[in-house]
Image (tube, rainbow, N blue to C red; front, side, top):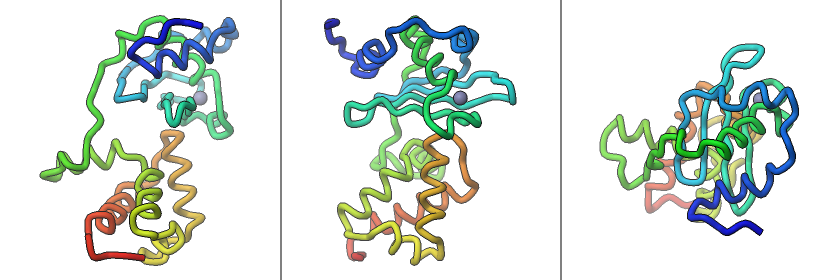
Length: 184
Ligand SMILES: [Zn+2]
């Protein structure tokens, strides 16, 4: 057992990525740019075989969730997410620490944009269900969108590929969450 640091994300990555990386993975280690850490999430970009990929690793409920916009990333772990983990292990200080935008900090369009960028749609949909009893299907009906479509938008956000309507759907969630009188 390693001594826990005050960085649970790094502890988890150290724990989970111990065996030596493959040659394919090695190719990408330390090749990341735009390295950012926000809360228990790291994000960076890397040049892959078909353009630039957005890669993330996030600690959620003590699980490591990885996301990558490459084709393979669709089905879970890929070389890029593993390489991001090793890059962070080797050089955690190279990731610029930024604050996660809070809903309470929204006061104009710029802070709204930052908040909508940081909060995952998945979290807003869960909050609607938990605090308002509004299911994803019922929410979808109110904005003329199928539950399947909303699921597709959520999944693609988790792999750093964004539907054009992502921000609008988040804003619709936010409206319902902020309106005290609205119930399911
Ligand atoms: Zn990938």
